[in-house]
Length: 294
Ligand code: BQF
Picture 1 (cartoon, rainbow, N blue to C red):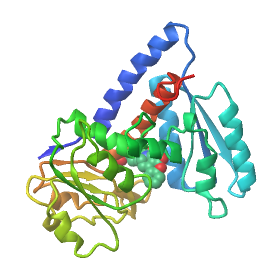
Picture 2 (tube, rainbow, N blue to C red; picture 1 turned 45 degrees about the vertical axis):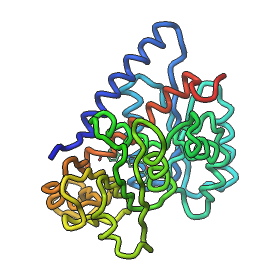
Picture 3 (cartoon, rainbow, N blue to C red; picture 1 turned 90 degrees about the vertical axis):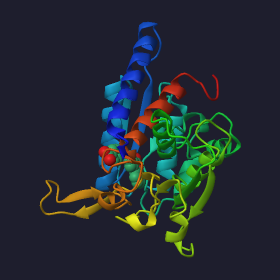
Picture 4 (tube, protein in one colour; picture 1 turned 120 degrees about the horizontal axis):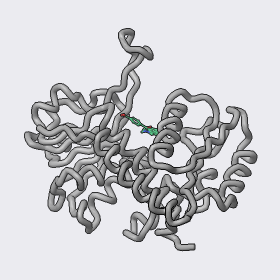
């Protein structure tokens, strides 16, 4: 069994990005600039935004954190988005999700200029992804594809079972794995809360993408011997012995499953760091105008 070390791989990719940024700067180019909008005080969101700002520092990007009160109106947030769309120094920006209930996430995502949509959540980028056109890939699926690629995991002809159908992980992951590409050519099954006898479907998988948001959902008896297991879950569970009073648990029962599979991603230190690093790769693409030109 091989542990896919997302922390180590993301450090490696970040040093590759840092070299590219140095080249841009020494050629007199503009420093890549990522902005993040954080609404309210959701503790997990604060951690995620902090991770992104720290990664920007590590790769030599400029970053701007735009903090807004929890009671900001939808109109005011849309104004913020328009301001960032029109700021020529900002190459890309993200609006950290989830947003408070009184704000329509779809409306806010639609307002982001697709050229600056480094999360890849805008329908233009999602549509381009589905069609195999150049686009910003959503960061988590991008990170997973990169892991499979860098660990030389064969995907062609394999049966991939995706657990979960969210817009940001399950659905795009199923599209990416089925397309005609180096990491792709899978036969994909997408499963969800209404799937009948989900364990029997997951047992057929050569590659399991667990993105359902339930701690330890995937047990050893649901995993075929030698399967590749990608754990997207980041669940906080109470733990009095932990420094912060909680610990992170994936969607996979790591203990049991790791004895059966060929590859597995740990939590923490698996998909999570790769998500943040993929956002850095998208921001570098944005600063280079790689997808949409000038
Ligand atoms: C790690 C995210 C759900 C909903 C919105 C490293 C991150 C997480 C874990 C991180 C995530 C999850 C992010 C680890 C960003 C990934 O060591 O295991 C980094 O910062 N993430 C997000 O921005 O929004 C989310 C998950």
